[in-house]
Length: 277
Length: 326
Figure 1 (cartoon, rainbow over the protein chains, first blue to last red):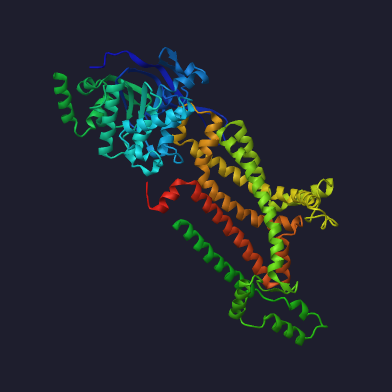
Figure 2: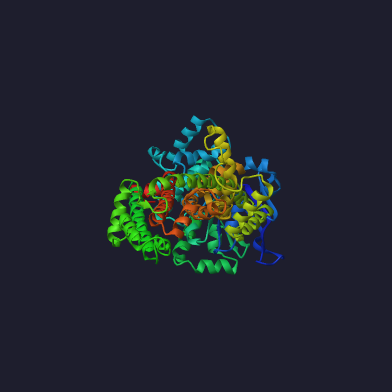
């Protein structure tokens, strides 16, 4: 088991509020997305963040991907506290944390070709020469099983599953140590989901990448995640190794989620035999 | 290509319908050009009948329409009763002036609106955005006519700009550059007024289109790669937001044209506006129909240009017309 490895990213007491104002009113009030979140993501493992929609998962994911600033708390990553960093310092951290979005169609710039899309982060981060970036783009397309011949096609000429793999190739261009996947499979058909999960598994084995996999569906993460964190109403109610969570759910809400899974028995049986081996 | 062919055919049908209906509508209105003569006791009924026959005004509607269509083919567009000459050449000069005015005004309005709209969207809810919002709302609530009259007042009171016309008397035969300079000075106020009329609409649309795009995941992804704000706004967000904005360009040409009629009358710019008003008042049928048709041609052409640009700018439309679907 990989669970014992050191922490890559540690979240302590993280909270995010959005200031809002009612129409025609001067007083501001805060809408809380999440509060007092503690999480540990271990190097080379997959942590699944599970909860119903509106629980604050996506906002949390965006804060960890440095797309939004948390209101309070710490994100410890490679010895630095990310929310305290200045813009210039964040620029280099961004290479190491990348995010995949739910809808690959809107996540890819429709005006660019596949190769340009993959090179985009390299251009922005000013890495490599033009030729080097081009070669790297083709290499990455191959690694996500997209034909290199389609490098000049626009993103809309690919199927949904291919688009998501293109988005993954783009994220991989910067060789991040942490990849955050926000519902990355939920819009796709089963075969495409399978292909992407296979790809992620291979990346983890060969490159030792770390994943934070956000999903509303406990079932879909059951066989993929090493650890599972359950989120409800802006709080993490439970974080545990996956097998343990299925075996011995502590929190009432986790049990509720488990009960909502139609094929719970079969998966639990599978987990149990795996644990026994 | 199918997309463009369809749009083009659509435009032709539309123009044919407009010509027919504007022709029919002005026939339906009571009275004609010769009414003013009828009340004049020194002109006999016989003279009037003779004139009516000469200009074909005594023929039934379908024949007149058919004759007009034939004269359309040779560019005459019928005969102006007031000017006693073919309508085509009269319209051509006026149309050129209107095009100059609306062209300059459109350019001006967009050049101002794009940076303001982008800035507002980038600073959404912040002070700069609220100031821009308040300013556009204010401008939007001022009636066009009041604005034009205020400009006229400015011209008359300060004397900074000529109060009307297109060229100063005596300069008609001057050299090209002094003539161009003089026309430019005359152009300032009407172009400003016309630009101000469409500016608030443009700013609002640009702002909302940009805000929508800025929420898109691919913009978020680019921010996640550490992109600079200027590059994000101009190179990523603006092209992505351009689709609705290009349609807006076609639409804004339409608003410009209808507003230009008014500004031309108030600031006496010798375009289609004053000609149309004059022609309607004197029931100079063919001039009215010609001017209406020409305005429609501009409008339709504006939309066609927008469609063409859309075709060039948006990969989704190109794919659709090739039968490839996302």
